Image (cartoon, rainbow, N blue to C red; front, side):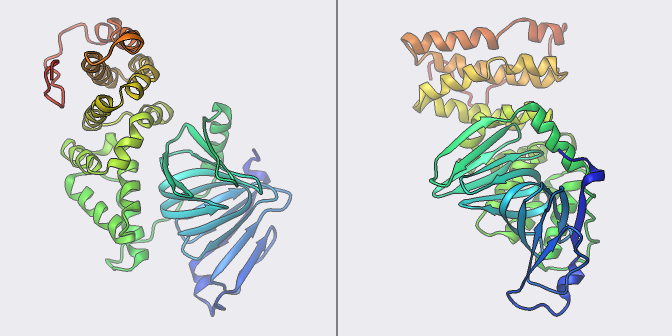
Length: 382
């Protein structure tokens, strides 16, 4: 990865687009280009060195040598025509690369695209990726590769590569969110949402304002989904009642809760950002419901995450470790009553790892005052 001293920078200020634009005209900015006369879209092209670029106030990135992107003046719509781009959006944006579409909200991500395939890897927050008739949530820690024929594979991200891409994002200039104008334009809504996401306490009223802004940007609900995904990692700033409201909104979206069953532990591990108890309870409830209709996938889910509480404890999150241990144990203990044979043995193996006694005893030598109550309130027989 190139360091800052080896990178050029090309920016397209909004004022440049407000000059007499030629409808449909596309301007190409290569390394060393001095300006833009006016265009509806602009194409950034990196030569032999990495190039930083910015379009609008909220979208920027780094192009590796030989890479090309085409963007509109707002930064909401960008196409990676070829190469490797590390991208950061402070607001809502959509990026296309071949037959793949990536939507993001206040997130950084990497896209690699050539004539044979497209690879997407989120870095700082989840993104939603669509290709053909398929739509998937990707969280930091994973990468999706889609070939031109539509074949898709998911794999973990190499740690060294991930850290290198994070460093590239840190070298970009900070986005400057426009001052509030109390306007109702799309640009004003983008700025309002970015401001709420970037600072301050998140109360139920603030969440309601965010949700209204997200719906205003996209009535299809895609931005609202991205908002809920983005707020998962803001537990430190979020009031308890707001966390419950966010979890409640998420529970009404079957797509999100299904996708997050396997992905939420990975996101927490990669970002090292614990989530609110309300989200863990939602995970427990949906994992249990899934297990009652698809026991095999539930067993697999618990086996994959059996050591998650212990990993959280070792990472320095004892309370989060206890919450996840209770959730995993309750789901496994309840579902095991429906299993037989190899499935039962596999579940018992997972539970033996989940219920390691040293997790709770080491963290809390004294009894915990609050008694854990499963979200379903079901008895074992039920």
